[in-house]
Length: 291
Image 1 (cartoon, rainbow, N blue to C red):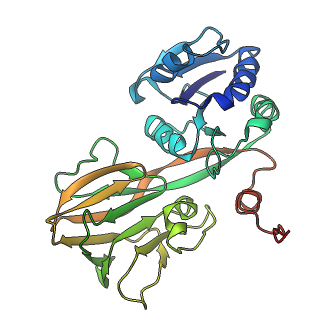
Image 2 (cartoon, rainbow, N blue to C red):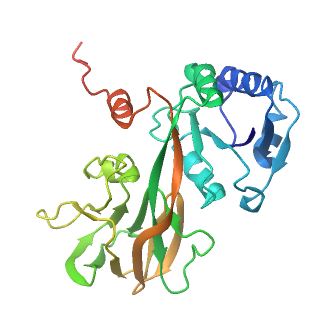
């Protein structure tokens, strides 16, 4: 077996979890490749790390890897996707933070989860991505989002977002911004602005305004085979475009096209980690919190 391990700086309170992780993987006959900046961080701790190789960029990651393991929160998981790309390597998310929908293996569950992983007791979920297209795109290296593509104002002025769906005029949004989300991303930024939570196997794209100045405007769900075009205008002459956790400034008047990506990301799901179990636990559904 061959695995890649990705992470960044991790809080010292998670050192016990990291110890369990490396103790478990080092007792297996596994080839381990660690992201170089993360490896350098680990060397500053008291952790015992077994012999491993390092990787620096996505060119060193290929389909020969059995798993790509992300140690961190959902932000780290989204960065891990940029290394995996279209290689079909299953991604595993171990949560070193608090709320995590993608990185949903808790510190206390590491040993059991790795046992399931190494014994083949898991399933694979395919997650769709959306692609960002524009002239002189600043995201040309990897213009894909697992969660969402967002356009936002850059100062105190509104932005105007003329929106078409498959060539049909939908709406002109006068708002602080607009979120175009995959089903995976509906538990992220989209949820915080009142967008619906959508099961990840639904073939949809969700368009949610950020602080719309028209009270009748609401999020809308469309099928994922439709192309979305956004024409953005701003008094500031520029606006902010984001793909997951990466943001860049663009000039006002830019047209952005968003469509479904031509590949998917494989996410590992353990037996008790269904989408519905995760929602119930993370959002405390069904729990009486009155006392």
